[in-house]
Image 1: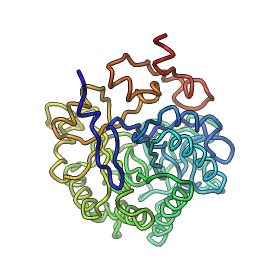
Image 2: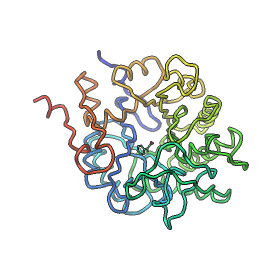
Image 3: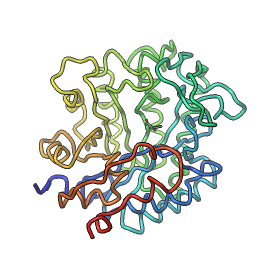
Image 4: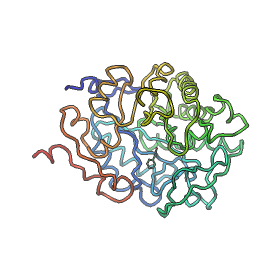
Length: 368
Ligand code: 8OZ
């Protein structure tokens, strides 16, 4: 099985990718003091870089108020910019591309992360009721009820993303991706379960989409549309998401993003049917394809063959791999030659040091 679609080049905004095996943004919670990428991060990302291959760096908070998990990296201080430069040098040194994913966790943050210990912010004062969250001390606690942003605070949120985009450019990234998925601030505005505002950022689909579109426009001001993308999880239920009309909502968002002419959209496929009458969960995301004719990345449980098939059939242009890329620094090569994959170890996904981070072997090491 040659997987020739997966290994064909792809025009990607301003760039040309040599293959379509993309590293998904992966939270690893290993940043050091000051939320600076740690000393192993250049090795970790460098191991996963290939000539003409694309890496999404992990979700990175654009402001201290946007942090929602322990030891995640930021892009709001000079020290963080310097830390990221080393990561970028390692990726560029191997001929790869690296985009930064810009993040604000909104109501899924916790006061222990907030400067001054204030409550996290959100579109509305509605707490996440499912699951628990981690404090800055790694304690598992219930979510707090967030503070609803005042209308005149929303421009500050947009400004925080704009500054994050500028800092990402100063660091030397090749582009930026807006984290609009998984129930964080941007999706909290999109989803009517978490957004019950009565101003122009709530209510209609158009109003709930406004923050995402304003932030995207700010990123475009900094980077140009051909180096900006948006990641969304239209059918995800994580963090109490579950808008009753995901097709209506996301077809609107995608149509408007198409008008902004961004480089790509990046969608996470449903792992379950998301309450829809569909034969397979994957079909849910296909219902949005008519609203997005441009470059589409898909993510969510792909292997080499299913990835190649998705590209061959036109469902997607490229596939982002998370857990397999985490455990296989040389994933593109392994898929290309049909080699077996290292198993991932969930225990070392989050936090800790080099173990489970830079010690997954490449093929030469396991095959000799
Ligand atoms: C795993 C653990 C913490 C955060 C996401 C950024 O869900 C994350 C994340 C993933 O998008």
